[in-house]
Image 1 (tube, rainbow, N blue to C red):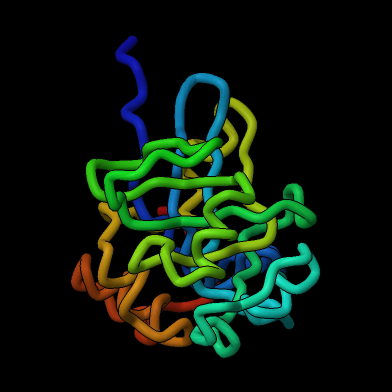
Image 2: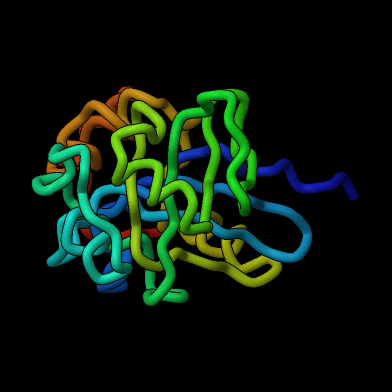
Length: 188
């Protein structure tokens, strides 16, 4: 039997029939996928916070004066108390960083937030509270059940497209118009 291919650096696009409230109409970037399971960050759900508020809760001042309106995302139901910063690779190393792709990193340490607060952080970055996780084989089962579409990650979807458009725009990368799909699945 062949090894399953990794879904790392892929966008998971929830199909209309996926009714899990954590993932309905969501787009999730898979950051890690291996034989132990998968971990990702949902990129199209806003929390009730803005970045300046989170920084203030951590005792940091927004010295850049540009973070007040930046939305903080709901990254998923796992570890909702933890912050996950998806950011472009700007050549710097942070205390706790995982390389997702040649152009994208995921950092969970405070040093990146302090740098962002001072206006010296990565040029393009998203802060999410929580992440999504799947146990070994769980994501593959959900894919087989037609819960998700997958497409290679696209930095423009992550950083340039407004949150409310990411679900449909990610599907458009595959040529799929989600408005034309039914909200139920069938088998022949």
